[in-house]
Amino acid sequence: MDRHLIGEICALLTAITWAMAMVLFKRSGEQIKPMALNLFKNVVGLFLLLLTVAFMPDAIAELRQYPIEDFYVLIISGVVGIAIADTIFFRALNTLGVGITSIVDCCYSPLIFLFAALVLSETIESHHYFGAAFILSSVFVTSSITPPAGRTRRQLLSGILLGIFSIALMAVGIVFAKPVLEAEDFPLIPATVLRLGAGTVVLAIMGIASPTRRALWNVFRPCAAWKNSLPASILGAYISLILWIAGFKYTHASIAGLLNQTSVVFALMFAAWILKEQLTPRKMVAVGLAVCGILVVALGGQ
Image (tube, rainbow, N blue to C red; front, side, top):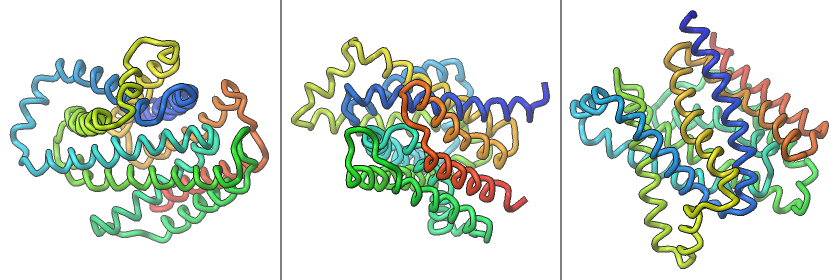
């Protein structure tokens, strides 16, 4: 099989698995607080990644050739982009539901370009601005959607702002680590383990210091919530991650990135099917604008 086709399949499967993970995380959030859910997700993902790394002795040995400063960068990136950002993201997901959150999630691409320009002095081209305008207009349309059941207009707007803030932190975290991750032959899975491990350790410390730590640590006791949180964590923190790396490894980054962002379509479908979220005309308009923005950003420079 052609390597580009393999990469494209992996990138598309990334979108599908992440969309399903979002649905299961939404269900988990009905029983588990955001910080506890994030900690559980990270521990499950870290455990599975460490098992994977155990079969990659050469990758571990290769880490010795890189400067200690690279590891500090990955640690900071993990704290910002995983410990803090994912916790806020889960809170937004609880407030907004999967469909609206997946639309807000499309802000990731323009925010990546913005922070890359500010931090790494990368050039923002005209098609980036046009794509960002489409995506931001999709978020504006989303803000006029009827709030989910049990939510007020104010909660809808605050959830959207929380979602944008969490995605901005994710973008900052990955842009900060980009020079290290893009270094020639830098082993991506061990780097991911380091980022995820740093985020997990910080969350664990926060959990120990929290006055509600008993409830936080109860998430690791087998319970009914595991029916959703365990498969969500396996899909979201391990399988989709491995597929994401494979997609970028075997095909062009622009194609992989574009196929990754189709998660907004799959998330909307899964949310309507499994969670019975309404597929309203305004949601469809917002998704259409978001997809147009993604296409312009990904393909405009080619």
